[in-house]
Image (cartoon, rainbow, N blue to C red):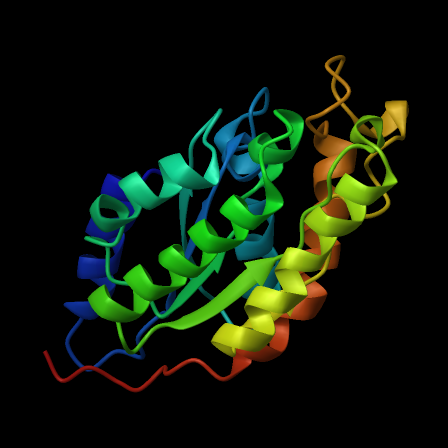
Amino acid sequence: MSVAKGAESARAVDGSTGSIRTPVVLFFGTSLTAGLGLDPEQAFPSLIEKKALAEGIPIKVVNAGLSGETTAGAVRRIDWVLRTPADLIVIEGGANDALRGLAPEDARANLERLIAAVRAKQPGATIALIQMEAPPNYGVSYTRSFRAIYPEVARKENVTLLPFLLGGVAGFPRLNQPDGVHPNLSGERIVADNIWKALKPMVAKLDRGSKSG
């Protein structure tokens, strides 16, 4: 779902007289969040929305993934995306930084800026950060340094760290599109399963209080 459509849906939900509100979960990230090469409803955020509904804790998902975005680009875009009110904001960033061999310390600083922006614009929102990994071709030192920034940021900023987005999918040709980077539908289902398991306790705690209209 686009940011614009998500905002419309959120307003529609909030405007329902006497109804139980459906929390809005905004996924902010790269092409991995957007579901590049797939139909929008096949991207993992949409699959998570379906899982939440099936398990009796429905959410309205807003997919704010943008192909090719680095963490620096995300910092420039986040204020616009945050025009959409959300109860839970899931940040997926750094994949393109790693593919380009950009400095892990810069990615860490940008992730901290993203979290600060969320807290400034939407102080009531819960925040989760998705673990990302660097490809092995930059060497062990770079890979370790890049991996470490996510738990470091999560601890410093007191946000929930979700598991590696592509766990069990990266490196398996049968689960990826021909580019070897973006999951196919089978891979996307695994991504959705992994992230949902970690996200479900957070979703269960979101406010669903009735709206009086």
